[in-house]
Amino acid sequence: MSEPVVITGRSLATALSRGLDETWASLLDGRSGIGAIEGFDASGFPCQSAACVSGIDEQSLDLPRRESRIMDLHSFILMKCATEAMAESGLQQHEDAAADTGFFAAIGMVDYRQEDLIGAVSASRDEQGGIDYDKFYEQNFRDIFPLWPLSMLNNIALCQVAVRLGLRGENTVFSPHGDSAIQAVAEAAATVEEGGNSAVLAGGVGEKVSESSLARGLLHGMLNTRDRVDPCRPFSTDRAGGVLGEGGGVVLLESRTRAEARGIAATAAVSGYGAAFGLADPADATTGPSADAIRRAMGLAVERAGRRPEEVDLVIAHGDGTPEGDRQEWEAISGLFSGVDSKTRLYSSKGALGNLLGGAPIVDLILAERMIRTGLIPATYLADDADSIAGSMLVRGQPLEARPRVILINGFSYEGQAGSLLLEAL
Image 1 (cartoon, rainbow, N blue to C red):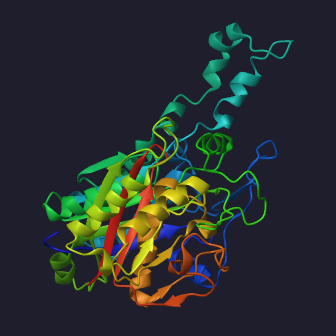
Image 2 (cartoon, rainbow, N blue to C red; image 1 turned 45 degrees about the vertical axis):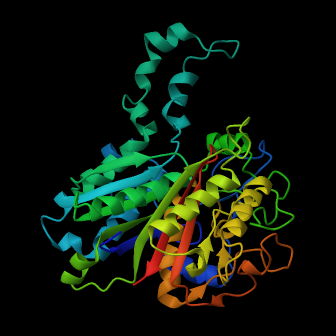
Image 3 (spheres, helix red, strand yellow; image 1 turned 135 degrees about the vertical axis):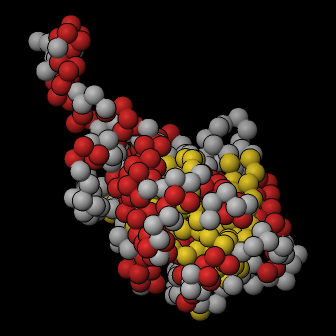
């Protein structure tokens, strides 16, 4: 990228906190947001832990009831983070800024709310406990909110945010997993660099933890069904999977020249992007990307930034704690840095924040910028012993004062896509 594309606004929400400062402090203190699921009865599931967000709803965002009826937690998180990122950038002070601001977001599956349907279904039960479809279709279906199908469209969340903020620039939604957030940032950076819009919001949000999202996680083989305590241990030799996490984040990107003209001295620029596809097991479409695909994605990001592997100070891994996923990623990482004189370190946030899917790389990008600002790398949660496939490369025990300047961020899909971003200090 010829003209540096920099971050001038950012906001995140995680199970640790609704804000960046508290989340960052908690990570440095070695705290985790993972706990028992309390929002619904998860006793029938073999995985009963998750990292859940609280305190973000229509009341906290002062949303009209009419709008919030077709929104849910993922929409509220995206709304909160986009509004705060826009405000932090200072662009809200310019009346014409929103019209020239784009918006790209990673949003995965959105499930219907049972309460939208349960009244009509219950009223249609027959004496045997089944459904009397004559009752349902003749009368009781009218009790269903007519716009309820809209709540399941993931681009509704992007549209609601864009309408509220007055955004009129280029936009789209990517899905479903971590690779989609990498694509959202890459597309946003390219839009700024090519002059499509002078500023672009890039965001990502995890799926709401529900009965349906738990079922999907189990089908993908990503959840730990063995351990109730400390269920996500990235790169541990005894790893057994991970847990779902709620949350997400948004960054505002613009050119360095424009940011400086507005009096903003940015810290870091998105300088490279890479993507590749390849299944770890070609016979199983849910096994995630292969080591070769991951290595190619990382290599492309480094190459496009005009860097060499040995210049990368830190890899923020996808690191979801699954046995095969971590093995494939570690094989790719060790292959990329093989034979070079490198002091590259490794970190994963999922042991503390859960797997935010489409929200994970955005949160990691915001954390990476904070690492560049502070010179500190938090310890990977639960990696404080020597039992790791990543050896000394994994940051563990205590935060590391390493002053990283070039950080590689990975995000994958369980359907075989691998994506990588390079963030570097200015």
